[in-house]
Length: 104
Length: 98
Image 1 (cartoon, each protein chain N blue to C red):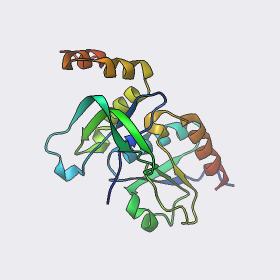
Image 2: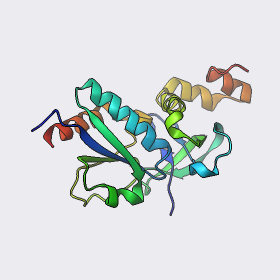
Image 3: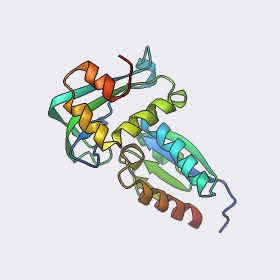
Image 4: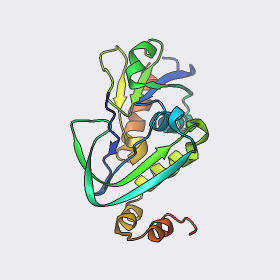
């Protein structure tokens, strides 16, 4: 069964949040890929819709009920158009971390 | 109409992990602000038919059957923010009517 994970956002930039079942996660974490060229993902809620995705948040969670904050942070990022622009304009890991306010 | 009764919402997503967890928490918070007590239960989209009997509303981030005799809202608004206020109003309206 295929479960698409594309998210259509407000602006031009779209995202995807691929994730796996909890039993496959060894260490909870989030990986972010900023794609230079968009990759087509299908929309999670309307799989017939194809979205050009620039930001991929790979969510590895083993106890989602304890990782609500992390999910909320991802949702907050997805709703911040200025931040999304900053992320896709980033040219290095450092720039991405700085945009997200993570100490390098 | 009994607004005091705790309303039951079935929250579904593909894996019953990431998005349904977030949606369930946000619906509870937002409905509490609107004076509606909500109890949520999470499941995978494929499990919706077997869990839908005793719920007032089904909210899903992925396609689910809509012919189960219960109101269904399929939305990504809690993740993307797009149309979130509309969806919250819709949920409130449905819960007040059941």
